[in-house]
Length: 326
Image (tube, rainbow, N blue to C red; front, top):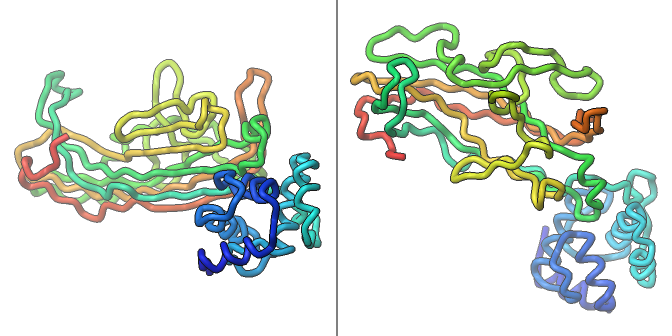
């Protein structure tokens, strides 16, 4: 448990030099100000929390935490910085994995930022070929991947993000009977999936359809011409607007990836009640990749994964103007 004042006091009493403190701050991805503050001990706490061999996470830099930091520095060949920290009492981790065998992932989070809701807007009806009153059922979630700040740019570019999706969408208008199987999956376009080796750790079976599948996992992205676009690939992750983001920062070669995704289904307002049930399952993966002969990347192993569900329950829109205007 972190007691900020206690941790600052403890660290200050260790009489680390200003240079040593700045090096420690760089290891834990805190501002390198050369003195102990609340941000620094919070980042030390986060560093400790990701390393079970350090025991309790309290933000205090004692011999074991200092040894883990030295291991991280040695792993990335920052020998001079490691030697600065070795001027103070330290205990090196006892196993190769613990000796700074650097975890490339510092942060991997997913959050629902807008629950499912009905929205209304003017849009083109693809069947009628004219502008009509349209409705949309949508939610928004965000994903952040933060890679270890000690990774060089070349090392960071060995890691990318992959997202997979499956699920069902049911809709009915007026007094229609609910279908047993999803009846609106074709409205959510998902690129065909080429599949991969089962040994990598990703869903492996190829899927040729270009719509949401109820039971088959597909890599998530956008159906586009002349070429589909998938989320998290550094070569194509360069999209940002009010709701959607798919971007590695800075400049596609950085250590931070941001995804803002808006699963949705839309239709023309029929003048009667519309009901929607959406049940979408997601898998997110941080993967190590290698380049093929054409300069494109392909996963070779899964580093970390996360699962979540976006579930609307039954949504009912009986008054068009009760939907949120967008």
